[in-house]
Image (tube, rainbow, N blue to C red):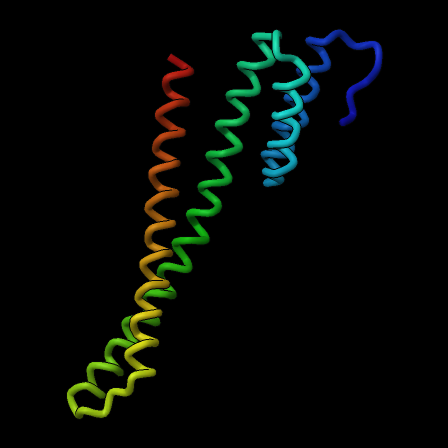
Amino acid sequence: MLVACGKSPQEQAALLAEQASTLCEEGQFDKARTLIDSLRRTYPNNVKARKTALRLHQQVELEAAQEELLQADSLLVLANRELETLQKQVDAHKATLTATAEELTLLTRTRMRRDSIRTLYETLGAKIRYIRKKQKEVTE
């Protein structure tokens, strides 16, 4: 932390908040979370600092979830393609009665992986909606 000596607690809290905000903008979410946690613990009785920390925390969590959602979306597209290709192959082998146990197991595992990615995607979407709802409540 680069908090200068001789500054008032309010100025020090504002400096921490500014640093956390900068880290968030740079995509350094873990470091921003650490500073926000420091802000909360160091200034527990400073209402303004705690409100600032809450807004920053919501913003950090929102941006991190949005970044994760983009990654999950890409993974989901790839998993769906892989599953579709494998499903066609297995269906063709089933039709000729040449499907193997390994193929069927691979199909099941691929489906399970796709489903887990889809669950992650849906969970992140719900998290983003919840954070946005809470942000609206705070601003109203």
